[in-house]
Length: 60
Image (cartoon, rainbow, N blue to C red; front, side):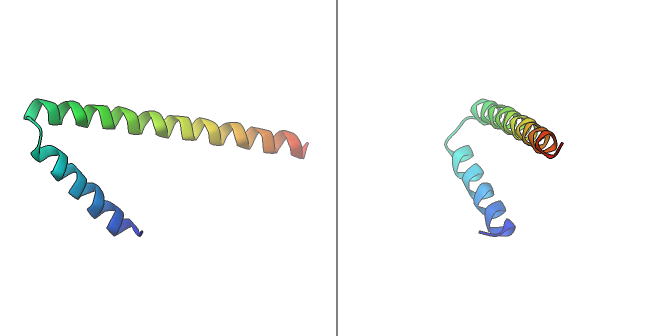
């Protein structure tokens, strides 16, 4: 799946979810997914830093 298909799929999912929710529920879901994405990004960055540190230590 390329970036355009991925983006279209995410958009379609958002529209489908939003149609079955109130405005408040939609806002809450948006906040939840924003926090989830930010947390996952932080964890991925920390993992990458940790693995990079191991590679540096192994090279010494």
